[in-house]
Length: 391
Image 1 (spheres, helix red, strand yellow):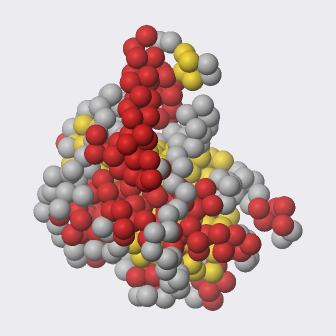
Image 2 (image 1 turned 60 degrees about the vertical axis):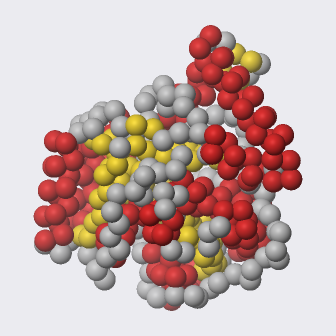
């Protein structure tokens, strides 16, 4: 594969718009030879969740995506947000940049947030030696944003290797900081409108690969959630209610401009006031349309994905939730799948917005009280009681 097609690989992957087709194997294409995965996750995230710091955990996970994409000039590369971590797939010529961004993010998370970030770089060649693969599809959440779906078992294998201490990255020097331009976490938790916010993870049975039965399970769960309207999307179509977190503003200022934190906080607050006023008046400021922006926040959100298994954070009523859980329990009993399901009263949104003037800003959704991390813990046997989020 020549350099041009290698760089454009993900851009050239055909887009599918109907999420019900997420298990269609024809949508998935193997990463080119010579690529690698850059991975990260929070060590002992369960302790941070128990302390009510899941917003910090989410922000640390998204910071990895932000740091890497900024380091490679925001190229079009596949990534997936996992709640307490992230995976980004990149061509081999960007490995040094990715290693530097990972190490800088790790140092920032430790020194500014008091959390430990585990990081690794895993070559696709090593994954394929294990008889696994990383294949990606491209799902359009809206006309302006598409998200990568991962299949093949390779990303899950790479994550296990990272947790076992393999493929680690040299730590950055104290004080090193990543470029986190665009990282934003100013929105307050978003309350459920239909019933409850439910974070669901369903993966193939232990040691197994996705079977026809597993793919049908995923399609059935997605179909039930679709009955709720907009697939159970937790963000209203016109965007979230205007509720902002001062702690979130402080986190964002600390990330973007640590040396000028107060000035950055004032600038963020000015932006918030401006957006609220423009939205209420239905007015525009140059090319910025506040009402269109908040609608795009909803449309561009990644509330459902496939990452070697189904991951969804949806807003559902008791009837739909009961039907979904019954399907998952039946699949578990038959040895088709393992699953975790965590119920909460609200959702969290952490964002990557390089510029509000462009409509391709991305918004990562998770449950507010542990979300994907608690659901994943149920699969591995780490059970947590309900926690209160610190906005």
